[in-house]
Length: 547
Image (tube, rainbow, N blue to C red):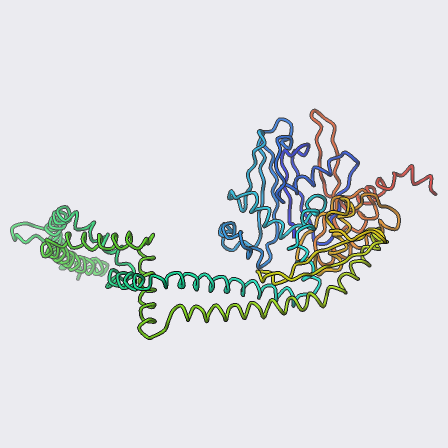
């Protein structure tokens, strides 16, 4: 769901913050008031190119930001891995934004972090669909048409899509592994030598070893300073020269002075005990320091050994191209496992081949189930879509779905094409190439009313759905929007009171004269809505002439 939309210095809109609700949200206003500007702002989030003309008068930049719900799995799409990593921990929504500078440059943001415009658009398109040029682009995309058909089949089909996506990833991974092993089989002897060398060079290394060695090296490099500081501290605490008084001796003398009187004053008992404990701790600290000093003196050549061990690790990392010590350990463990498998008589190529066959079998199984359901649903879907179109001033023609087979991929083995024949006797043609902007919007509405929850899109924005219609058709479109609003969020920019009247939330766009003139958008109260609908019907004076 689109929770909110924030617009700043965008064309004539100085500032607007709109909070949308579930169901149908209507945006109305006089012609030229700026409703198209609102559509352009949403279009930016869907990947439209920026333009210097978008920056409002006297401003240095324009800014559009939307907060949307992010359903589970929305980021599980090839190409969105980088943007998915930016999602803050615990965040269950998406904050998407575009900034347009005065020279026409733009920046795109996800959760306040800069991202490529195309990646942001791909993610927002999964959450929000828009009519007009965006609908034409979407309806012409075979992948979207396949999504709509699967949504029509039902929730079980959408679950199969999830299973297929996982099966495809497993297959791709198994295929890559098999190809690598087959490629390496040509240099089997060299491979064995490399594995043995990797195992040998990582022998005895454990997690944290490099870090420990670096710490020890730092200590040994400063052995003189450590020795001097440690010796001086020990002497100050408990000097070996009996003629010198240290801190422990001073504490002991203090206790000797206090102990006789502590028996007289009960409140001095605690101080007396603490002085005794302090003396013991000071002498223990001096002993520990002298023990540390002895360890420094006992390993005069240790630094050379530590340096040698760190150089061995560094050379191993360079030799095997490991970017970190942890990666070196991981590769060493993998080499041991591979050598163990070879020693046990298991051929890695054969094992990888069997894994690839199993992954392919699973992929084919799920793809076949998907395809079977699609082909069974095509006649019903075409009939339901035709009926829905007939009620939206798109009657007199036919809707057809053609399904063909292709090589298996992440969405299965089917290619889908939506075709429409506006009038009897005319040839069928692709939907996106045949209809006008308003017709495309109504086609999209019809498809979404027969598919489940708008093909998984939580929010649908209609900008041109009322173009060229009125009367009964307007009522039919309004009814269709109301039905769609029960399953998905709808935002409709409209001139028709029939459509605006079915909205649960109503916004009015109004141009405010001034220097410069600007556009404001406000949410109407329940008391204000009837007056706006009256204005859309022609105003009180016009309505009076009809009585």
